[in-house]
Image (cartoon, rainbow, N blue to C red; front, side):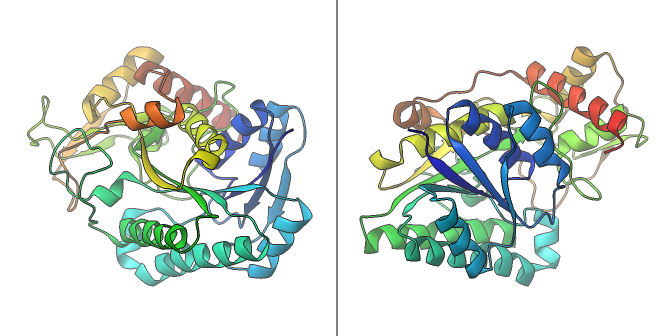
Length: 337
């Protein structure tokens, strides 16, 4: 029998792809989103992909009444919690907004879940909780620390969830720490669509490739890496979405566990740019800039626990990520999105 899954922040980049994969796996996704960083048309496009309208509630996770009503009306069995502000730089200048939205919002969500007897949750955490890597690849036993308020909110929430499980073994919690999601759905009709200036590499690459910006800024060319540019673990957003579905389906076997979602391979900024140019036949002019404060040289996952515990591993390559992202960009331009 299909489960009804509440997706907080489900209209965003990652959430919309999880929505598709939940439906493909036979589940019923219900999306709650305040649309602060997404658009209503995303849900229409997701509906076209899955062949039916998506149950959508416009609301804020800090609104306990909306949460309780949604959980009860839709008879929700589990929650995948993605709602949160996520721009690292913005978190430094607006820490109170990040603690209010991310931490207070999570508290309201957990209170509503407890009131409605829903005690299964997959939490969207982040590799930022590892801070500056002490060794690579990063596995789940790596010491935890953060370098910015955004990462700190993720770390605080992980602590809250562990305490909740410690207090009651009725809770089943998976903390998914993921690395750098890129790409788009193979249809090209949903993808990363940040409001304002992008904070991540791929949206900048897409802007330059589409002629919406003149050149890509590459922050730092003097890192101790093969080509001097930063190395990251880029993961296709569809692989990431499937990882959430696998975690949700296995929550009954999990108490409270942190699991990495990544490829286990590092790719430098310039390697990604060159792959994008080669795969799509377009130029991406770039200029080297000074390092940004807080950036690390290399960061990539040890994803072996995800394979052991969730039966999950990535299937899509850097070329797939570049091809699908460009297909999405061309669709977005054609549609005036």
